[in-house]
Image 1 (cartoon, rainbow, N blue to C red):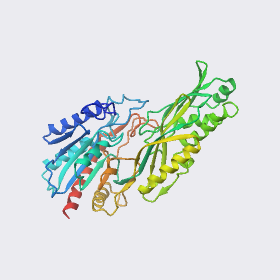
Image 2: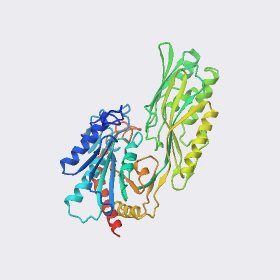
Image 3: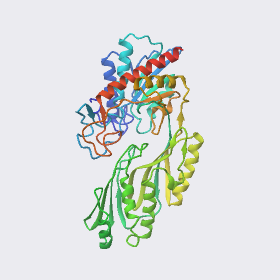
Amino acid sequence: MSLIKIPSVRGEPEHGAPYGRACADVLDAAEKLYKSHGFDTEHDRENGYLLAGDLEYDSSIPLLGIFAHADVATPGEGWIYTSPFEPLEKDGFIIGRGALDDKAAVPVALHCALMLRELGIPFHSRFISFTGSNEETGMEDIKAYLAKHKPPDFALVCDTAFPPYRGNKGGLRLTARSREQLCDVLSFGGGEGGGAILGRAEAELTFDEELFEYLRRSENDFLHITRRDGRIHVEAEGISRHSALPAGSRNAGGMIAELLSDCEDMLCDSDVRMMRFIASLLTRYDGGVLGIAVSSPDFGQLTCTNSSVSLEGGYLTLEINIRFGGDSAETERLKEKVTKAFDTEGFDVDIWRATDPHIVPEDNRFIIACMEVYRKFSGNTDARPNVNAGGTYGMYLPCAAETGPVYGGSPEFKLPPGHGHVHQPDECISIDGLMKAIKLNFFMLMACDLAVKS
């Protein structure tokens, strides 16, 4: 809870705080935790990461690690039980931004280190924990770490869920900006960008009595139409989810675009045409309108989601997040297809981040060891490793499994759709589930040590 209180959203860089002061402060707090328990630390302040554990670099001894990050996604709106950085303990849960993603992984790693030291169990490897502060907005921290250090022989990245994950989809992050100005749509905005699907959006239109009455007939619990300052005001409330896990989401910007796309003869033709494209892009998440709806056996279905929309000077801008499988060649093919598809619809594209898909073979000895532990712990003898739709540090580590900072636990208190999970308002974690996750990750660490020995 002390870590959650630190609003470690990326900010303006300064000396010793490359991702902003709050992200540096949360690493200071994590270092204080480790040092209070007598662990050596290495704090790279210029690159924004913290190492703790066995820091004597003997390359002849295998190295195992646990990786966590203490930066968080933007807080978002609509919190019910508490403010994002005022953590609340309620009915066996902790509520606050970062409670689940991923500040809980810091005590997971810390307690694994404590158990290794204090329980006297034979351990044949060296152990390190890595805490980063730039996972949500670029992962420059782990790139800097790998530029200076040999990666672990195997690592647990406690930033996902169970059963363990053995790889990550690739990702494209891009901004698409219209070349043509909207005329009757005077404003259109929502979302903060980043890793959450657009949950709230608003638009303003030139007032027209016929249009106003037509839109009023479409009002419901999630769409509100009012007359304000001589304009038509449209407000939509959707369901936000993690950009990589869009099932069950409802994009608020897509709701508005879909509503306006039916306003022929009441909006100018160019506005209707653009709204139809936006609606087809934002109300689905398979990328079909861009011609990129594909699936692969290991990675599953491609997803294409939107986290923000804005209108400046009449030009519409969208932030798009695409997650996909395949190999590095698929990254380049998608770049070309996406750029061409948006160009056809009158949009210029800036692809500002691209990562290739990454996967560890299912018969890898460490993956086998982790799965054996998980099957015994859970009682699910048929469980198989997953592949992560989202991006974590695991995609930069040559051999890693992604696990969770929580095992089980659903709150009994009321949470509406779009609340309680990662990147959502009222993000929360089960305290009992956190304790079980500490045990499970520790058992996996021990099994991987035996796999090293064998």
